[in-house]
Image (cartoon, helix red, strand yellow):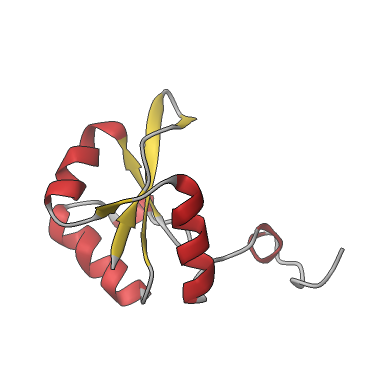
Length: 94
């Protein structure tokens, strides 16, 4: 299932949502491509979606969930990339 959280994340002069799949990156990439979200907005386990595209991704079938629910579902899926992994550290390194 494709999930999107509300546009509440500020950055680069706009407000953003996160678009994820709770089953596969293939599903996520296919959905993003289908609605014209550029691959450059992919950030390892999610797409950043600008506020002006939010209604469009919901209309295309993304399920609206809270930010905390989105993270829980992403973690459960096994697709979540932690900050340690982004930084190149072992997940169990302090």
